[in-house]
Image (cartoon, rainbow, N blue to C red):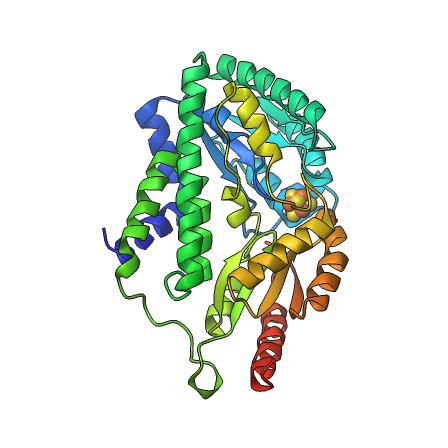
Length: 391
Ligand code: SF4
């Protein structure tokens, strides 16, 4: 399949996931579990998959919030508020149950409110506060075993070592393919726009993972096809400025649109709805639940599960250099405490490393995205100046 056809199929999935999920249900007779997703989902989707169910990512939506305002504080982030809005409006009635990670206060509060508004089962994944050491691994292994038993009861399909190992392999394979796509993007930033890359990542949390891997393989096979020209050449005929994205997600759609209109190249990211999602690898060698716990604890530093701002800054700087990015756009969802706590350290360390950065506070339900464009423009101007002065 050509690059254009594959991207069209992915776009169809992302623009209308409910139709596809309903179709999967009808075809398979299986249940659907809506997984609250952000930095990244941090729900062990392999456990849901092994029980013959479809885990579906709920990343919030670009919709106005009305009903949810009566149940959640107005200072909760828009990922939590718009996800609840979808739930209250019955927009996601295709889900038979829901799963919440304990990664931030917003999701913890949301799980309590959600339980009070639905008859459907709500599963919780509670992570240890400290993610290193034997005790953390042992605790999470037990948590995953208990969750697996609950999910097996819910689906009616017993799950053994063989089923779980198979699911782990399917998810690992998908993560590897996505990392390969990342490398391709760094080398050929014209191959995928930010909006297309966000779509590819999002589609992975709507489609059965085997299906998604088929599409990513098809994109990788099309690597030699010419991509459409994107963006204006930089000053003096140089290539467009190269930007790295960090933070929560490149949404609302006004963000990728502004980046495209300004003609910048996004050469990499470590977003929750981005490469953070597929940056771990579940190891092999031990019992499946032990390996799964190890893999989830091995995620690179992030603001929620593995908060270590200095370690995150080091990882970020090394990825910026690896991808030859000239500046960083920090995308923080408004009221996201974990990300806002990390920001001062990231800003300081980037500055010390001589990497310009700009913080963009975003809201999925924002009504006046024009200000976003102005901030992105400011970063692009700084980077062009730097080039001009040979910095
Ligand atoms: S508070 Fe931050 S990490 Fe938590 S759901 Fe909101 S945006 Fe995501």
